[in-house]
Every structure is written in structure tokens, then in C-alpha cells.
Length: 495
Image (tube, rainbow, N blue to C red; front, side):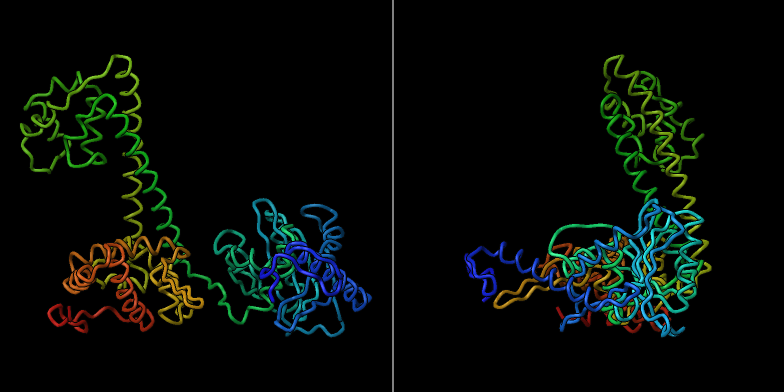
């Protein structure tokens, strides 16, 4: 009977009655004592710790030994040249031997732990995040003289790119949630340290590396496209926030510019706010002055200047003199900032167009209906060029969040929305299928059929996105462009 099935237990070995929490605590303490005894008995003279593996393949609790190592290692502090190195059976170390490392990265320093195939501690050191520290890291890994598989809890950054340049290193990106759950295999307590986290990453990689895929290194063109597309998204978020601030300021003292042109972020709207920042100045605008202003801005909205004046007059509300003076000052600054963000977005778009012209996978993505340069750049940069990264389409659907999560236990079966996904890919796929459902007849038919069956708007879009991603994965793996003639026509689809 499991310990949680009864409120009170009688421990068979210790002979007292206690609750489930106390029982687990006693078992954990007893396990630690037994493991410490076995480690002390089996440890070689050099001090190496033999990794004890249970029948299920999990390492035994090494908390006592790790606390001992923590007290001894890196006594010189961060960047110390004295690494805590323990080599077991050095006489039998061959060049073809494989090591497993874990890096607990940080902003100013990183903790490195390396184990051999049997789980013995080989290298443990604290590395500064500077030029000298990274050189020391490369030297320590090179001294091992063998292939080193390294696990780290991030997929980008200077440290990741530096490890990619080392010829003997194979890098694995581990989710922080996986490493957090893996810590529970070694300790019952919630204690945490950089040394122990690095050890957990290394030992978990030692057991699970056959099931994990290494992190591929992108080409220079793909890396630049990824950096540009991600930074463009950040600028877009800053622009939306600035536009919201400007809109809030105008609503407090001068709402007329919000109703004059089609959008607040247009150049002519921002220039109007700069030229006429207060309601009193805007009241002097007549048809001739409005026509001259539109000519100077090369306005192509094809709206008569008299119509613009008629839009302006009903919304010339006024606040007090103090509020108008303060808010007009802020409005001019926010308008300048918004225009700067708009110019930056245009520069990003031009650079993305240039990179897509050079990328070999761009024709594949741009051949699909509903995909423009921004969506194509994001998909290419997030999917990468390594076709082995997504060996099946199900892996790609899970990465993009289009595959639901099924939880089945006993008589209960639930299908839920997948939250753990690449949010950048999920966002651009939403835009892709949103446009395709309005421009492509096949997509429109699939979407309308799903809605007719009772599916919600976003559920129908996710279903359409899953269909398109299956087609995209097939074209991407075969390196062929999309052929609309191979798709059934809308009239051939069953309702």
C-alpha cells in the first residue's frame, strides 16, 4: 500500500507510528546514511565518487558527498585557477572516452561539472563570464582529451555560441522544468546550489542523452535572420506601448488628431501633432491650410481637405490651460518617439527582405498563401536549417503549440491546450492562418467547416494551422516549394 493511502503508518524497520511526511523523512535520512556508507567503502584512493545507479537507471542520492565537494571545490573564489579535478582510473583514460558535463550558467560566472560514463566526478570548476574565464573553460575541456556532451538550460547567448565553437563539445539544451524535476531524484529536500545544479544536469544527460537531440549550430545567415526578426518583434512591442501612451495623452486634452486620419502611427498624423499640438492652434485650420498641409506631407489618402476639416471640428475639446500646456509637451515627445520606432521597423523590414533573398529556404516558405516576409523570416529562423531537429511532423506540431496535450488516467481523459511551446512560432502561425483563411479558398473552406461543427474561432484556426504545418513540414524536409495543384479544391471537400 502506498504511503499516502493511510493517515498513519507503522514503519517496519524502525517500529514507530508516524504520518506519511515523517515516514518519508525517515526513509530519506536512512537512505542518505546507507549511500554515504557505500560511497565511503567503495571510493578509490584518489577520492573519486562512483555513481551508484539503481535498477531503474536513476543515480542514488549523493547529497552527502556533494556537500563535501561543495566545501572543498573552488576555495579560491570565482575565477580561481585551481580547478577541483578528480580523475578515477586515469591509467585507463582513452581518447575515445566520452564525458558528460553540466553548466549552471549565470550573469557573472558559470559552474561546470563533468562526469565520466560511470558517473564519477572528473571536473568541477567555477568559470568567470569574461575572456579569461571562457579561455579557461576551453582549456579545461581540451585537457580531457575526449568528446564532451554538455547540458545547459538555455539555447542562445554568448556562452552557448562559445561552446558551439569547441570541436569536442556536443551541446544539449535542457528545459529548466526538466532540471528542476531531476533534482528530486537526488535529494528529498528543497536545497539548491550552483554546484549541485551543474551535477544534476551532467548526470541527467549521462542517463538521457540517447533520447535527446543535440542543439544544432545555425549558419551565419540564419543566425542573423533570427537576431533581426527577434529584435524587430521587440521594437514592435515598444512601438505599440508608445502608441498607447500617446493615445492616452491625447484623450486627456486633445482628441481631435485621433479622428482625423486612418491611424495614429501614420507619418501625417504624427506631423499634424507636431505642427498643431493644442486645440487652439487647430481651430485656425481651414480648408486652404489643410490642403497646404496635406501637400507638404504628400498625403495620398484621397480624402478631400474639406472632409478632413469637418472631421476635425467636432472633436476640438479643450482642457484647462495648465493641463493643455503639460500634455502638449508630452504629446510632442511621444510623437517623436513613435515616429522613431516606425522608422526602425521600416529598417528592420528592409533588412529582412535582403536576408530572405539570400536564404536558400526562403522560396519554400514564401510559396505558401498567407505567408509574407515577416512570417517567413520568423519561421525560418526558429525552425533552423537542421532537418533532423524535427524528424516527424508531430515534433514540429508540439514545438509550435498546435498539438494538444492529452492527459489520460483510468477513466479520465482530458485534451488540453498546449502552453509549453515556442511562442514566436505560435504567434506567427496565428497570423499566417488568419490571413490564409481570408485569401485562400481551401483555407477558407476548412475554417468555415470547423466553425459549422461548433468549434470556436481560435480552435478552428489552430486546426487549420496544424493542417498547413503538416504541408509545410513535408515541403521543408523535401526542400520543395508548395504546389497548390496538389491540394483538393474547396468544392471537393466534404462538409
